[in-house]
Length: 228
Picture 1 (tube, rainbow, N blue to C red):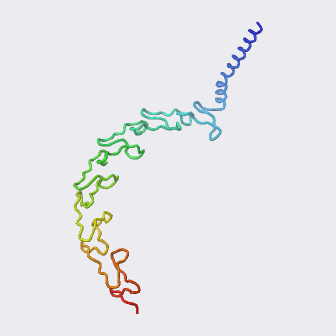
Picture 2: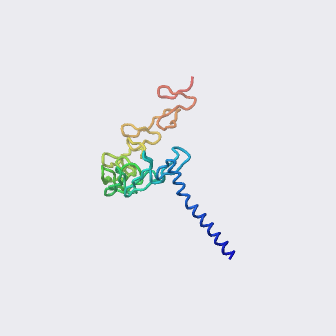
């Protein structure tokens, strides 16, 4: 009997302790209400002394719920909302992004939210096919005509025309003027490459387009003269 009474008393103490612990949240809420803590808020040790729970935002009246539209979601801080992929914010809603034919959704947060497929370029709200001329190819650059000419050809309006390379010259894509350059020892003149005239006691300089005198000769009237 003593053992039974002891067990009953022990159970009663545990039940009393559980009851007291269960009352703590209510006591804490009552204390918070007494401290002027608004609904849906929690205490902090900085700033105003309290912050709103996730999904709520501070206002004059306290913590107002954030309206998350359909196809929207709260950000990582829980104080703003963003639209799902394929949707864009319009006022208080998330509206589907109108992707044109031959376009696809873009992961960029800037612009229209879509881009054109390869071989197409943006024209207003549509994707226009890039017309690549004969002897040309698609260019992946985001600017310009969208195409470039094959080696040996140059752009002329919307065409690619063959580059006429004169004798003693070679193709040079970096030369946007003619597309070709004279070989070393030659200079361009009237669309042709003429030989650099090197006088006696002289040699081509580093550029290959001019000459300079050998030592100890010096230049005088287009010739190399010996020192006096």
